[in-house]
Image 1 (cartoon, helix red, strand yellow):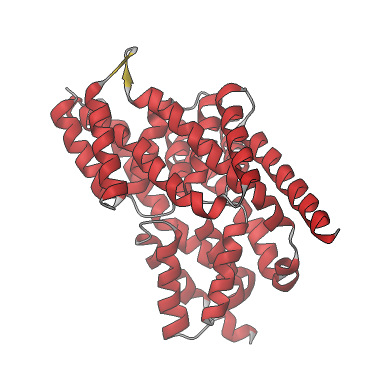
Image 2 (cartoon, rainbow over the protein chains, first blue to last red):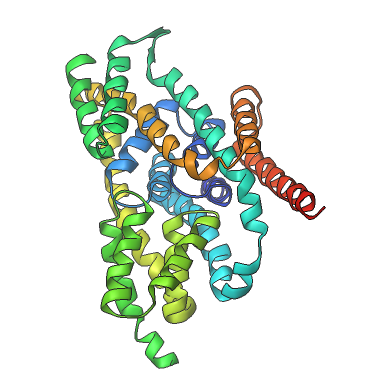
Length: 176
Length: 187
């Protein structure tokens, strides 16, 4: 059943990610291995989720669930991605003092944070091969747009939505 | 106490719904909004408590915003308060994304939209790179971290292992290395 599969898939994503961009490699992996989405659609999710209000992970879950199985699919995926909050975080809230003293999560995070960084580096490689290569050869127009975006974001500290707007305009001009 | 707390539910639901409509730019914008509304204006919690919740929310799996809402809501009005805060903050993005997905599905094959999206996709890798640069500082504490990060990257690219499994391996490595370090410091 697709709803249960979406719920489980996003619960796995939720339990193994720690917010923000660290979710993208996990979402990419689950979407591709279940054949629910293409690499391009995952890139679209990231861009769209960055331009709409709400946390990235939540937006991705809603988008992916809806694309795969309609509104009920969106509901299942969202419930899945929120499962750690209504279980682990609620327990932590109830046993605040004891939870704070436990070092287990902090120690596990010492290994998990670098893994997230490594996975994000890997998805940069994978997404590059999908976004800058058209029909087997590198597309110069997309490379130019990518370079301009990188400079805007890193050098000039532009906001993500602003950068996406510029990239869309350049796409209209250069990618016909 | 109990009566007073349940009286807070509509306030929590309404205020977090409002937060949910304007949470651009990740978790920190909502922390700022909670601070203004519930520390400065309503005095439900202190600055120290809020700082405590956010640092804890970051070390709990899942969405940092969801975890912060649960921790705050529970403190303010027990389990119903926690659920009200979570519902309030997730409802607006959920409804908006349903609309956005619908629009995306209808228009993505339009030639103009398709070329704009090709441009947008080209910006996604730079967006991920800039996020990676920010993560680097907090995540890479010593040489072990670089080893773990490189191994994780290699496993992602060249093995068929699922990312979920790779994260679990990372957690195990973290527990193991910190244990070895602690023993080393003792001796």
